[in-house]
Image 1 (cartoon, protein in one colour):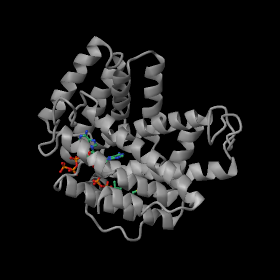
Image 2 (tube, protein in one colour):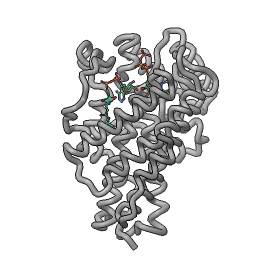
Image 3 (cartoon, helix red, strand yellow):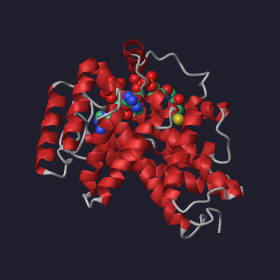
Image 4 (cartoon, helix red, strand yellow):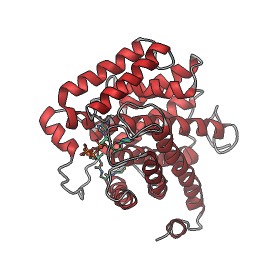
Length: 324
Ligand SMILES: CC(C)(COP(=O)(O)OP(=O)(O)OC[C@H]1O[C@@H](n2cnc3c(N)ncnc32)[C@H](O)[C@@H]1O)[C@@H](O)C(=O)NCCC(=O)NCCS
Ligand SMILES: Nc1ncnc2c1ncn2[C@@H]1O[C@H](COP(=O)(O)OP(=O)(O)OP(=O)(O)O)[C@@H](O)[C@H]1O
């Protein structure tokens, strides 16, 4: 099915459907942009970026872009499915089905390379949660706040967590790397992060990004500092799988040290970042979970910016939170 065909099958003429379509296309665009912005941010330790393929033999920047773009329809479908719905078992299973189809589509585009599995999970849940929340806010005028941005980010991730905590009864027994790591090290990965409401995005990635911007740091460095802030604390199952506990501890220490030196916008911090990248590549470590959560941070950042902008026009009022 072509992309145009798959969209036209989504579009039916009821009013609620028109609203849902509008938000869904918007969210799909933002999600793809967040994935491409994450991929193009350079230099990222051990990850695919504009300079090199990091610790990956089978990926490059064009593949990351193609993969991200192929997922637009997946995010649109997730937003569509969630608009006007409750966070319940049935929605969890519908999103899981769309997510698995998205993964399949991604694997066809990348010829079998796992470019964005973890990202489909994180950004997919955030997409569904945002769409569900937008429908509630639209129809019940429930947002009453002068700091809509913070409320939106917390609300969206709480809803995402509620959805994630339902069991997907149709999930195949995958024997994934994450499952292996959980058994071996007893640490939760992508699933745990979502079930807890993305604490590494809400409490770490977003505040680091906002603080760096507040200090007048250029956007590229602000994003790199946000990534390092997440790296300093995240139990990334990709690192654990390839390098074990010691690799995780060393990764976290190196990220912390750069931030302690003033971050990537300082000369010392920048040199340390380049050395960190070389170290990761030399050891074939890849912080894929960190990359996903940076993408999730950028995605939520763009959603809340968009909602704030809407608040001056339609459909939100910043003071009443309701439809104007
Ligand atoms: C939950 C998922 C990520 C599988 O998790 P699991 O840990 O078992 O698998 P896997 O080893 O493949 O890891 C997935 C990816 O998560 C990312 N990741 C690793 N550690 C972390 C972490 N601490 N926090 C967040 N993401 C992480 C990495 O990119 C990694 O590649 C997901 O792929 C899944 O279940 N998909 C099924 C379809 C589905 O339910 N979709 C819902 C869409 S809303
Ligand atoms: N820029 C990036 N570079 C590399 N990985 C990324 C990037 N952005 C996101 N990722 C995430 O990293 C994950 C891939 O990591 P990894 O290569 O460790 O997984 P794998 O293929 O399952 O494991 P392995 O390569 O060890 O066999 C993807 O699921 C994706 O979501």
